[in-house]
Length: 482
Ligand code: FAD
Ligand code: 2HG
Ligand code: ZN
Image 1 (cartoon, rainbow, N blue to C red):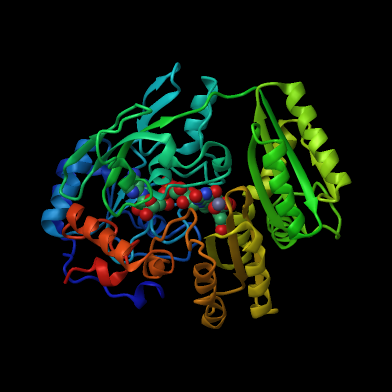
Image 2 (cartoon, rainbow, N blue to C red):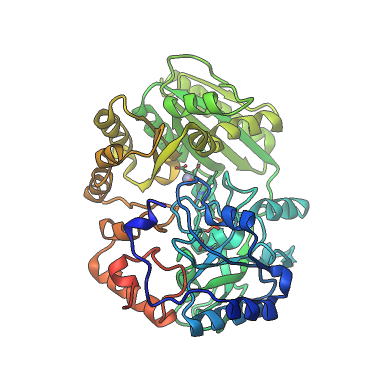
């Protein structure tokens, strides 16, 4: 594709031959070595249909030992590999750039143990997030993370991207909730760090290297996660604000007045709302009015139904009187709550249906965040739709530019402007989606040269031949070794 043509295939990598395929069949059995064109087309294409690779082979291992054998062989043959989970990643990290072998994790989907006292879940990396959510629900627990892609994304993919999502404001990042993991290194060595301890200060905590490293240091095969108990009272309010400053003030108030029960604080602008209404079936605005410029979702989770509800209602009343919110509604049942979430979680899908999309996932100071959206809107004028939404409670803006087609003229209006702006305001050019292929060369906007250099040394130590997810994460000057 056009993205791949901008970088060159690393000539140090071999090209797959029939002996390789036979060898993989010996390790995995015929049916788990896939050369079917339709399967490969899907696996070569990312969720947005923006990035396309040319892999000729997809492997479907069922055990850690099989992955170990695959990687050991690929390393010795210098065959490049892309670890792939649910392929919902948004930065082109989960698909090959050229002819890398795809290691699909979908068959490693067993729950290994669940401890009902501690709430610690140990499972294989290929478990789909939604299946883990349902499993835990049956045991009276919840996952500490939730996101719109839950029906397809896998816990291994979540860990490898350090996915944030809708509950981070309450439960924190996966760096805190993942207690241990097992990973296979490029040379096939298995690192057993599958501990289940809350506290373990015995030297370097190496599991953190694999959380958020996007398949560039090893393949995560098992994880141990701390899961919170499910609480009895969950409330969701869908609110309208007339300007961005009100959203900001509302966040501050929510933290002060709802702090101990606050479990999500999300926002979208009316351009995001329009996009969802125009492109998704069966969605309607719970607060229809042309006056609303912003919408905020506030979720509370607590243990006392009447107290929590009263608290939320009093908060909303005060916010209404104080002019922070112009309208609002509390979900009356679980169906209404999911229809509210559908609006927020549906934005990426609506964007995908609307045409070409440029995605920027930024950490920014909350008070500056929306200035960027307005500046980009001014720069682009009528040529594209600019929408802003995201995890306001975490200082995470999802700036998206939607256009009928990909167009270099549009891109030139956005980049490097967005990255420079973010860097100037000491933000991050990737709050939660990672760098992948899209931002591998942009890393210096958020990290110092010394830091990137050390990342390169770690990569070289763990993956000396650079076979794991090449062209991703690290700048290309560092990741090609020839
Ligand atoms: P993939 O897309 O398959 O892979 C992602 C990266 O991880 C790739 O670099 C891949 O090589 C690597 N990888 C995957 N599995 C492994 C493994 N077992 N070992 C080593 N490396 C591996 N992200 C957020 O942070 N917050 C959100 O709220 C959010 N919402 C989303 C909503 C939608 C509708 C979509 C489409 C995506 C969303 N995302 C969000 C993006 C997010 O990164 C992914 O959804 C998810 O974390 C990726 O999981 P996956 O299994 O699909 O991984
Ligand atoms: C979300 O929060 C995801 O919905 C996707 O992280 C963000 O589409 C995006 O830009
Ligand atoms: Zn997000």
